[in-house]
Image: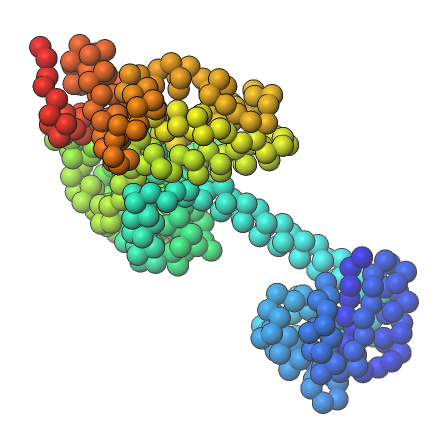
Length: 455
């Protein structure tokens, strides 16, 4: 039952509203003046306040001001028999939802209350959904890599600097971009995402910049582009390394001049957008190959971030497993499942070529396909138990041989790289592609581990 606080010095008004509200299923509370209203608010939080403006002592405008200071989210509708436009504007500026004139029309009062409560419900639902989205996009981990990444994000987010995020597929580059936006001064404005690799070349300009009616066959109406939609907010250009040189030139112009024209249009549109770009490619190598503009790279790479692969943050796997189990069990309306230490150790010994995305998919599969409440090693897919490789088995079964986690991880990584090199006839390019890391990165690891290449 919704509660309504009626604040009015006229007893006849209070009594007439009392009967109407009770008949409509509301629970009415009463106050004769502003002081009583503030005291009532300290004892109970009503769903809505009907507040008269002209009262002895503290008037309605001052009462509203005090309510806004102490109870900023409280829903208030003003009433007055001597209202003026100036008074209504002042009340609205102070945060009143609506303004009702006396003598009261009961139909208008009920309609106003129903609309106000409906708006409040929508706001609460929106806040709940935003909280759920924030939780779903939370960066999970306590490893030194993740702690350092979070520290860098906290420093960079409140600034206006453009950001370039690098990392392998599935590491969570989008999560980093969203966290930067959430902690920025643009958090209340749009976060607009563009997957540059997923949009056909002939459509990407229209997608980014929009188009005018008749700009091309099928353009039956004007359409805003992503830069338009992200005005005053954040534009996330994912997989920017796959963008064509022609489109790169246009994006560079926007970043420099902060204005553009829609496809087929002549009008110049100014935008205020913070650009965050991400790629799984080595853009310096792409520049040398002639696939990426050097000037665009330096324009974007003001604040660089690198998201580490999952195999380099094994201590985060138990937390990620717990998070995904809770998420997917809730999503599928299942009892919360747990995982045995043996199964978690096998997950920690796996190389995770698909990174966090691969782990998330596997946990979803286990939640759906495992009938038991406890997930054991026997439930894990063969990609974990059978293809963890000799290095994974050594790490899982002979971990006691190593004094520290770092030593065990390095030994596992060395054995894993040797095994994959053998499988690919010691071809570095094929091996790098197979395990989804940059060729230059694989070269560095081979050198660091002292692996002798075989012909």
